[in-house]
Image (cartoon, rainbow, N blue to C red):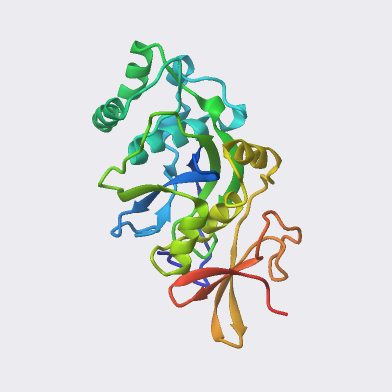
Length: 280
């Protein structure tokens, strides 16, 4: 899932964006939309993730001006566009203003977009719609560790999924998809049924505390947006020697203040990274 080496010097991270789509559950609580990355993928292959990917040069193009609403942070406009674009590509879900899109329309739009990068803008303009960038709330910034071969500086956005959009994986980059409560996805991870990377696991753990979609957006409004860059270190305890990814605030991280609630490190146990506190 990850390609980590303690002595790797590291490469500059590429800008990326992820969109966490949530909806209130009729029985109480929330559900999140998850996709499973293709097992053949060189980065996070087989892991359960949220729709997302690296920014394309076209995400900053001025041609978007006429078909997007103002983002909450103008400096992250290209990131918000990328998050929406990736959501269409990997999940067939798209926040729009000025109308609505059915699942069938989204499936067709995804196919058009795959053949022509300008098709999304053209369809939005023809239907008098805009990407609803204002619906996206940034709530975290994770930077891939220096020890990883492929590095990304990723803004995590959260948005309430548009009504009537069910979501569907693309059968290429993503091979499965589902709606589930954060607690249920975490249960599957604990049972060894699915694989989660530390940023996904921590996001789900935080969202599991939210009782409805409004609570998710309230959490995003007060979240720390300083970068979280885990550091790979040797780890030894009663269970033996292994590796750990330590987060800001851990005694072995150079950033002394914590930037995200929860355990200060992820320890490699078998093939899974488990959230733990620093050993005494």
